[in-house]
Length: 498
Image (tube, rainbow, N blue to C red; front, side, top):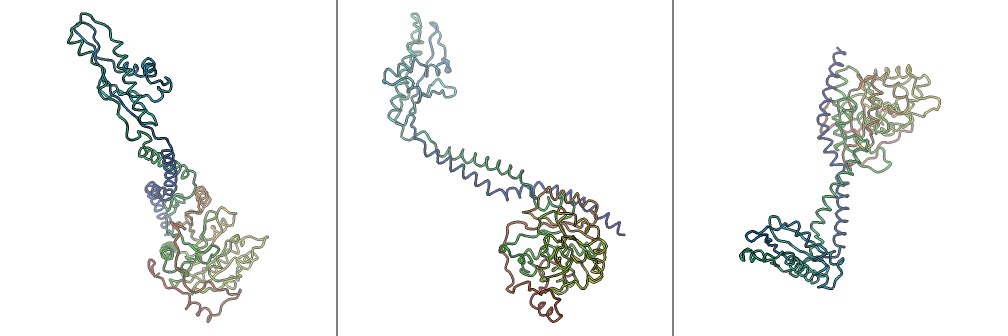
């Protein structure tokens, strides 16, 4: 029966992994824009500001334009050839025309050529001779002079045809300025609207490029789907990020400090998932672990409180000797999990400490002896067996998988494993390494949880302080009853009453 359950869970894990990969592209796109939107806007605004500064710092330039009609040239007594507008355009900006205009205006040819521009409208025989200058009257005067110089040059280039038809000759000889250069009333450049438009386009392109580069170089998780796909385990919960005062670790115990928050609802949902998995397998010991630096202890502690609120007898085991603060979260001090390494596994019940939460007891880490790490497998196995006989659930806050070899010994002895990722702290390469390292116990992994999801939100804490210190002694039944009246919170909202 158990092999059938494990096989079904393997198939379900495969289906879950394929589904999250299918939805990963859409989810990643949303998370990309959500995470990089500020960066994109910042770069776009910076480029737009620079474009505006450059546009308004440029000297205004005025442009005057004269239109010149280019007539046909007489070839024979009866025919006329249409003008080659490309050649005429080159002639209008040639040195011959510039020299004639320069002599008329008394301006050097180089200076005159700097502001000249000649264009030909499509499908016309008209030259638009333009001149640009910071002085509008100067632009008008020089554009008119250049147009007159071209007309004079064109007439000089026409061959004499003594026997030509007078009607053809008269029609071909009408080369003139059809639109004189007018005094410009507004500058032609800079065009602030165009400059700002180009700056916005360039800024957005640069912002997207930089955001994409940062996204590629960022090794953090790409959301819940990414965690599930990389661990190969179904996603059992997503815990919103909670904002609290720096250094106040107990604020992360939201099941007690903020029982009406979304984070507390997430832990009640996680409780439902864990109890179902335990019921399918017929087991009760759960290891909560992570890759390296993720906040797994709050997940394990809040899950323990959620289970205790559902009238379950729970033992919280703080097995992370490198970062032991789980017992402080739950109000139990001076526990001695480390002393199990000295062969006291049979006396584990004496080492338990009560907490202000009814039904929840703690086996804390105690002091870490440099000569001893976690308990020896035999002692730890005896301890877990004893705890399992006295509780409905044993939640082990284990060491990170990639930090030392302590986690390897514990994974061999527990019945279930819950993996924790952090949206802000977890690196994809570390999640991959964790999944690879736990390959030999993959059947024990019931799922994963993503913490610190989304923006940090401040939650309203309960008015009473928690947890109270117990001064290293077990609390009497009267003391427990008083604390339970103050601190016990009944399940509300999104959880089940198991």
